[in-house]
Image (cartoon, rainbow, N blue to C red):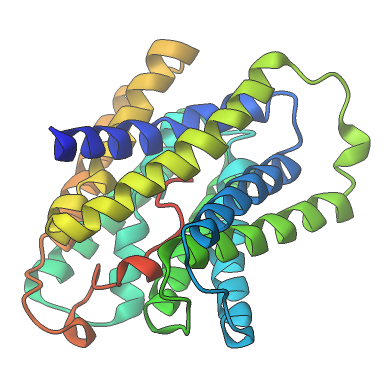
Amino acid sequence: MKVAAAFATVYLAWGSTYLAIRYAIETLPPLLMAGVRHLVAGAILYGVARALGAPRPSPRHLLPAAAIGALLLVGGNGGTVLAERHLASGFAALLAASTPLWIAILAGRWSARVFAGVAIGLVGVALLVRPGTAGVHGPSVAILLGGTVAFATGSLYARRATLPESTGVSVGLQMLAGGLLLTLLGAATGEPARVAVVSTRSVAALAYLAVVGSILGYTAFAWLIRVRPANQVATYAYVNPAVAVVLGWALAGEPLHASMLFPAALIVVSVILVLSQKQEAPCDSKPVLCTPVSRVPVSAAR
């Protein structure tokens, strides 16, 4: 029952973040919103970890944590919130689902299964974003795909970076660094001046992203990765887009275009192939998902 509840939390919490982002940026500036989300979540995770006895991070941990926070949160999450100004949340989730493909490509460790998965996935992405497809906004697609590459790069770097052993301290530092950078970037681009009336729904969505998406979702994920096989936990990568598409359609009236179905199916199949790669070998020889829990991405969702 505990395992099932944790899986449900990861699937629903992370799958729902795309719609929550859409609601949050209705009246909140995107970069500042994302910055506040991660600053709040990072402060809570770091504070709780330290209160429970985790050691203070050393100076050698700070720069790697900041670099990972920049790649995952400024690049990955920042790209998503900017893209969702013009893309439906379900569409954005489908594109973000290609992240494991970029991890496999950048890792450069190939098997027949991984090669087939990457090839199928790239075809799916190309079909999904081809000109003339309903819901496609070219610049936003480019921003989001660039964010997935940044997220993949940060994920691989996190596997070898010098980080605190405590998951809460490590993730808290990454969120604090990424949140600070997002906030500074939002301020530098003039976002505070563009804030007018802020809706209750946007504030509630921001709170949901910080508490449910970041804190509860990551806590459930961190526990699962300790007690269940990595490939089982990795099923979030192809369940989350389905959750996002259904929620966007059911709650926000986002259209389900027939032209999305086949490319979406290709992306999901490709991710299954990549993530089902056998992982009995030592970590250094695994193509994906061999990261210790203190080094896993701070949020697989956006």
